[in-house]
Length: 180
Image (tube, rainbow, N blue to C red):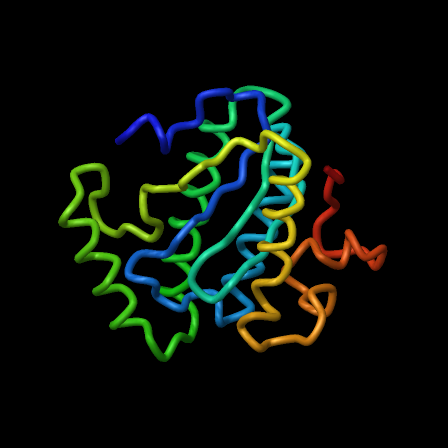
C-alpha cells in the first residue's frame, strides 16, 4: 500500500470512504444500515471515536473521524472487521432475496485475498485524507452531506436520516456528532 493511503497522524481527523466489495448495494436495506449505526455508537463510547460527519449510501460510507483514545487505524480496523462479520452473518440468517448472489461475491473476494478466510465484505482501502484547512473541511462536509441529494433520494441534505447533515442543521440525528 502506498504512503498516500495510510493514516500518518493517528491523532488527526481524517476523511475516509469505506466501500463494499464489488459495490454490492448492501445498505439499501435498513437492517444493514442499522448495524453500521450501532457499531459507530459503540466505537464512540468504547473506543474514543469522535465522529464529525458521516453518510451511508447503498454501497459505501463516507466519514470524518478522529480517535481520541488509541489510534484511528485500530478503530477503523475493528469497525470494519465487526461490521463486515455482523452484516455477513445477518445476510446468512435473516430473510434476504439476494443472499446467494451477495455471499458468492463476498466469498470470491475472500479467495483473492490471503487476509480473509471465508468472506470479504469491505475493500481494504479507506483512502484516508487528513483534514488540513477550514476550506478543505467545508469541502468534505459538503461532499458528504450532498451525496443523498446528488443520488436523488432527498431534496435537502438534512432530510436523509443516515447522515450527519441533520445534526449540522440543528435537527439532531441518529448519532451525536462533534462539530468541526
